[in-house]
Image (cartoon, rainbow, N blue to C red; front, side, top):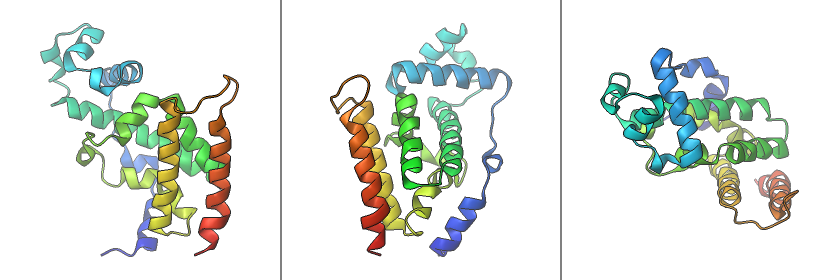
Length: 196
Protein backbone atom coordinates (compact mmCIF):
# COMPACT_ATOMS: atom_id res chain seq x y z
CA UNK A 1 0.00 0.00 0.00
CA UNK A 2 1.28 3.46 -0.94
CA UNK A 3 1.90 6.09 1.70
CA UNK A 4 -0.81 8.78 1.15
CA UNK A 5 1.48 11.81 1.48
CA UNK A 6 4.15 10.34 -0.80
CA UNK A 7 1.42 9.41 -3.31
CA UNK A 8 0.10 13.00 -3.21
CA UNK A 9 3.60 14.38 -3.75
CA UNK A 10 3.95 12.16 -6.81
CA UNK A 11 0.56 13.31 -8.13
CA UNK A 12 1.42 16.97 -7.49
CA UNK A 13 4.67 16.62 -9.47
CA UNK A 14 2.90 15.27 -12.56
CA UNK A 15 2.34 17.61 -15.49
CA UNK A 16 -0.41 17.66 -18.09
CA UNK A 17 2.08 16.21 -20.57
CA UNK A 18 2.10 13.06 -18.42
CA UNK A 19 -1.48 12.50 -19.59
CA UNK A 20 -0.84 13.45 -23.19
CA UNK A 21 -3.41 11.75 -25.29
CA UNK A 22 -4.37 14.65 -27.51
CA UNK A 23 -6.27 13.43 -30.51
CA UNK A 24 -5.18 14.66 -33.93
CA UNK A 25 -6.70 14.86 -37.39
CA UNK A 26 -10.17 13.44 -37.89
CA UNK A 27 -10.31 12.11 -34.31
CA UNK A 28 -9.66 15.63 -32.96
CA UNK A 29 -12.51 16.92 -35.12
CA UNK A 30 -14.80 14.18 -33.81
CA UNK A 31 -13.93 14.92 -30.18
CA UNK A 32 -14.27 18.70 -30.60
CA UNK A 33 -17.67 18.24 -32.25
CA UNK A 34 -18.75 15.79 -29.55
CA UNK A 35 -17.63 18.28 -26.84
CA UNK A 36 -19.78 20.98 -28.43
CA UNK A 37 -22.78 18.65 -28.73
CA UNK A 38 -22.43 17.47 -25.12
CA UNK A 39 -22.22 21.05 -23.95
CA UNK A 40 -25.36 22.09 -25.84
CA UNK A 41 -27.45 18.91 -25.51
CA UNK A 42 -26.05 16.87 -22.62
CA UNK A 43 -24.31 13.50 -22.86
CA UNK A 44 -27.55 11.50 -22.80
CA UNK A 45 -28.65 13.26 -25.99
CA UNK A 46 -25.50 12.63 -28.01
CA UNK A 47 -25.60 9.41 -29.98
CA UNK A 48 -23.22 8.15 -32.63
CA UNK A 49 -25.84 9.05 -35.24
CA UNK A 50 -26.25 12.58 -33.89
CA UNK A 51 -22.49 13.05 -33.92
CA UNK A 52 -22.12 11.60 -37.42
CA UNK A 53 -24.88 13.87 -38.73
CA UNK A 54 -23.14 16.89 -37.23
CA UNK A 55 -19.92 15.83 -38.96
CA UNK A 56 -21.75 15.13 -42.25
CA UNK A 57 -20.66 11.49 -42.30
CA UNK A 58 -22.38 8.15 -41.82
CA UNK A 59 -22.38 6.71 -38.29
CA UNK A 60 -20.32 3.61 -39.28
CA UNK A 61 -17.52 5.95 -40.39
CA UNK A 62 -17.08 7.03 -36.77
CA UNK A 63 -16.01 3.52 -35.85
CA UNK A 64 -12.86 3.93 -37.94
CA UNK A 65 -11.72 6.41 -35.27
CA UNK A 66 -13.40 5.29 -32.02
CA UNK A 67 -14.55 1.87 -30.87
CA UNK A 68 -17.53 2.94 -28.77
CA UNK A 69 -19.51 5.92 -27.57
CA UNK A 70 -17.72 5.46 -24.22
CA UNK A 71 -14.39 6.06 -25.98
CA UNK A 72 -15.73 9.46 -27.02
CA UNK A 73 -16.75 10.15 -23.41
CA UNK A 74 -13.25 9.19 -22.28
CA UNK A 75 -11.64 11.58 -24.76
CA UNK A 76 -13.94 14.40 -23.67
CA UNK A 77 -13.31 13.65 -20.00
CA UNK A 78 -9.55 13.46 -20.52
CA UNK A 79 -9.57 16.90 -22.10
CA UNK A 80 -11.82 18.26 -19.34
CA UNK A 81 -9.81 16.75 -16.47
CA UNK A 82 -6.60 18.17 -17.95
CA UNK A 83 -8.20 21.63 -18.18
CA UNK A 84 -9.62 21.35 -14.66
CA UNK A 85 -6.32 20.05 -13.25
CA UNK A 86 -4.27 22.80 -14.90
CA UNK A 87 -6.63 25.44 -13.60
CA UNK A 88 -6.76 24.07 -10.04
CA UNK A 89 -2.98 23.58 -9.87
CA UNK A 90 -2.37 27.13 -11.14
CA UNK A 91 -4.90 28.77 -8.80
CA UNK A 92 -3.98 27.07 -5.58
CA UNK A 93 -2.99 30.20 -3.63
CA UNK A 94 -6.00 30.25 -1.32
CA UNK A 95 -9.10 28.28 -0.48
CA UNK A 96 -11.22 30.97 -2.17
CA UNK A 97 -9.17 30.74 -5.37
CA UNK A 98 -9.37 26.96 -5.44
CA UNK A 99 -13.15 26.93 -4.99
CA UNK A 100 -13.63 29.82 -7.44
CA UNK A 101 -11.75 27.91 -10.14
CA UNK A 102 -13.74 24.73 -9.52
CA UNK A 103 -16.98 26.71 -9.58
CA UNK A 104 -15.97 28.48 -12.78
CA UNK A 105 -15.28 25.22 -14.61
CA UNK A 106 -18.66 23.79 -13.63
CA UNK A 107 -20.51 26.97 -14.60
CA UNK A 108 -18.72 27.42 -17.91
CA UNK A 109 -19.17 23.78 -18.96
CA UNK A 110 -22.20 22.44 -17.06
CA UNK A 111 -22.91 19.42 -19.25
CA UNK A 112 -19.23 18.49 -19.45
CA UNK A 113 -19.11 18.78 -15.66
CA UNK A 114 -22.13 16.49 -15.38
CA UNK A 115 -20.41 13.95 -17.64
CA UNK A 116 -17.26 14.04 -15.47
CA UNK A 117 -19.17 13.50 -12.25
CA UNK A 118 -21.86 11.08 -13.41
CA UNK A 119 -21.88 7.46 -12.34
CA UNK A 120 -22.25 6.24 -15.94
CA UNK A 121 -18.88 7.64 -16.93
CA UNK A 122 -16.29 4.97 -17.96
CA UNK A 123 -13.46 5.97 -15.60
CA UNK A 124 -11.40 2.91 -16.52
CA UNK A 125 -10.83 4.47 -19.96
CA UNK A 126 -9.09 7.55 -18.51
CA UNK A 127 -5.30 7.78 -18.50
CA UNK A 128 -4.06 6.27 -15.23
CA UNK A 129 -3.78 8.86 -12.46
CA UNK A 130 -5.45 11.71 -14.37
CA UNK A 131 -8.53 12.18 -12.18
CA UNK A 132 -6.63 12.03 -8.86
CA UNK A 133 -3.99 14.44 -10.27
CA UNK A 134 -6.67 16.93 -11.31
CA UNK A 135 -8.10 17.20 -7.79
CA UNK A 136 -4.84 16.92 -5.82
CA UNK A 137 -5.11 20.59 -4.72
CA UNK A 138 -8.14 19.66 -2.58
CA UNK A 139 -5.89 17.35 -0.57
CA UNK A 140 -3.05 19.84 -0.37
CA UNK A 141 -5.36 22.42 1.20
CA UNK A 142 -6.45 19.90 3.79
CA UNK A 143 -3.02 18.97 5.08
CA UNK A 144 -2.87 15.85 2.88
CA UNK A 145 -5.80 14.37 4.79
CA UNK A 146 -7.85 12.24 2.36
CA UNK A 147 -11.05 12.47 4.43
CA UNK A 148 -10.86 16.25 4.72
CA UNK A 149 -9.90 16.49 1.06
CA UNK A 150 -12.99 14.52 0.09
CA UNK A 151 -15.12 16.67 2.39
CA UNK A 152 -13.84 19.82 0.68
CA UNK A 153 -14.45 18.30 -2.77
CA UNK A 154 -17.94 17.16 -1.69
CA UNK A 155 -18.77 20.73 -0.67
CA UNK A 156 -17.47 22.09 -4.00
CA UNK A 157 -19.24 19.41 -6.05
CA UNK A 158 -22.54 19.78 -4.20
CA UNK A 159 -22.46 23.53 -4.62
CA UNK A 160 -21.50 23.25 -8.29
CA UNK A 161 -24.36 20.86 -9.06
CA UNK A 162 -26.89 22.94 -7.15
CA UNK A 163 -25.76 26.06 -8.95
CA UNK A 164 -25.70 24.66 -12.49
CA UNK A 165 -29.11 23.10 -11.86
CA UNK A 166 -30.38 26.60 -10.91
CA UNK A 167 -31.28 25.61 -7.36
CA UNK A 168 -30.32 29.05 -6.05
CA UNK A 169 -32.67 31.94 -6.75
CA UNK A 170 -31.37 35.45 -7.09
CA UNK A 171 -31.03 38.48 -9.30
CA UNK A 172 -29.19 38.03 -12.57
CA UNK A 173 -26.24 40.13 -11.39
CA UNK A 174 -25.48 37.87 -8.45
CA UNK A 175 -26.88 34.93 -6.60
CA UNK A 176 -27.21 33.82 -3.01
CA UNK A 177 -24.81 31.07 -4.06
CA UNK A 178 -21.99 33.63 -3.90
CA UNK A 179 -22.46 33.96 -0.17
CA UNK A 180 -22.68 30.21 0.37
CA UNK A 181 -19.42 29.67 -1.54
CA UNK A 182 -17.74 32.37 0.56
CA UNK A 183 -19.00 30.97 3.87
CA UNK A 184 -18.00 27.45 2.84
CA UNK A 185 -14.51 28.60 1.87
CA UNK A 186 -14.06 30.37 5.20
CA UNK A 187 -15.43 27.42 7.17
CA UNK A 188 -13.12 24.94 5.48
CA UNK A 189 -10.17 27.33 5.59
CA UNK A 190 -10.36 28.00 9.31
CA UNK A 191 -12.63 25.79 11.41
CA UNK A 192 -12.54 22.36 9.82
CA UNK A 193 -8.84 22.10 9.16
CA UNK A 194 -7.61 23.81 12.32
CA UNK A 195 -9.30 21.10 14.39
CA UNK A 196 -6.93 18.44 13.03
